Image 1 (tube, rainbow, N blue to C red):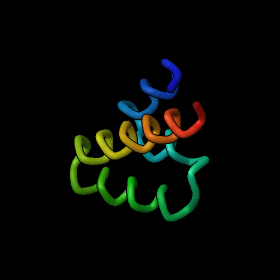
Image 2 (cartoon, rainbow, N blue to C red):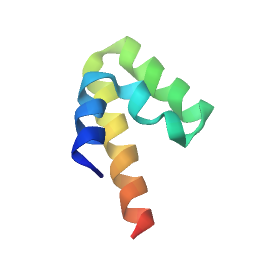
Image 3 (tube, one colour):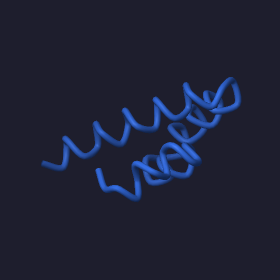
Image 4 (cartoon, one colour):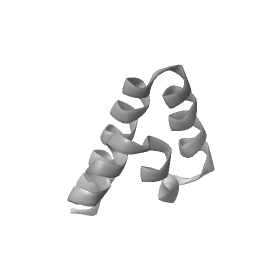
Length: 55
C-alpha cells in the first residue's frame, strides 16, 4: 500500500477503495457515514489486504 493511498484512506475512505468495486465502496461509505473512524479502518484494512494479495 502506497503512502498516497494510506493518506487517502484517512482523509476520504470511500475514494481509497474506488477500484475495489461498487459494493465495497458502498460499505465503506456507509461505515464513514456512521462515523469517520469505522470507515477509515475498513478502508485501511481493505487496502492492506489488496496489497498483500498482489505480492
